[in-house]
Image (cartoon, rainbow, N blue to C red; front, top):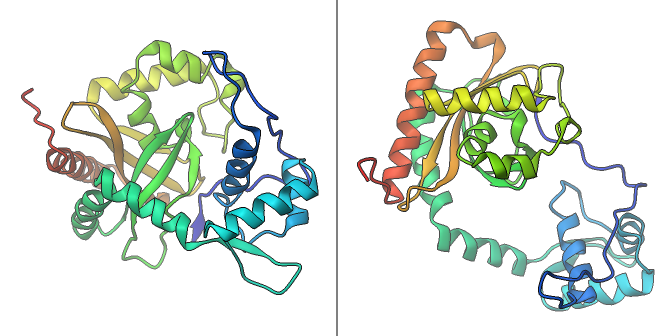
Length: 282
């Protein structure tokens, strides 16, 4: 098996935390709130829990402030202590309740899971659904392959959008001006493998091709052992809100099977789009 998740940041490298930032309307954001959110976002990375000294080191804020903020978050149920003092903290039930509320409102994950299951049953490979988060994509649905050799990844994993088939499908739906803001120069395109996109010229060429044919692909760009095909998912307004992808180990992929995977992922994405209220004749 093989893994395509992004390596976690080196713990010894503190993140820069804003003490308060001025918004366009001139108001100052609340520094305590920002710090609390910074603490919660540390748990987006895969870990077995964090202690106060680790949080202090990663965020570069005073230990006393971390103690107070962690205590408040634990009191409200967003964090939970899972060891004797000095306690190790993990996400609490309140954080999962928020995630569940988000999923209920969106319906994308629930509907996507059903569509992904049907496509996975037809192809026997791993089917995933991603949404965009700035320059990145986040995996919100994953249905595993039935093969013993398959993709090892987690729902919630985050990868650079330009290194994935699903990310390219989402980027292709954006206007050129927004892509310029996301990737103003080649330095913004950090490669994950030797095959990754690393120049704006190649990025724009691949996105143009994706728009023309209606699907995207990845050839060992986020993981040297993986190829993917993907298609965009639209909501009732016609906005591209997600992408469905089929991930295949390169050792199992050939041209004849690739055509079948493309047909399947386009069908699956269209089915999910229809379930979200999209009408292609609009």
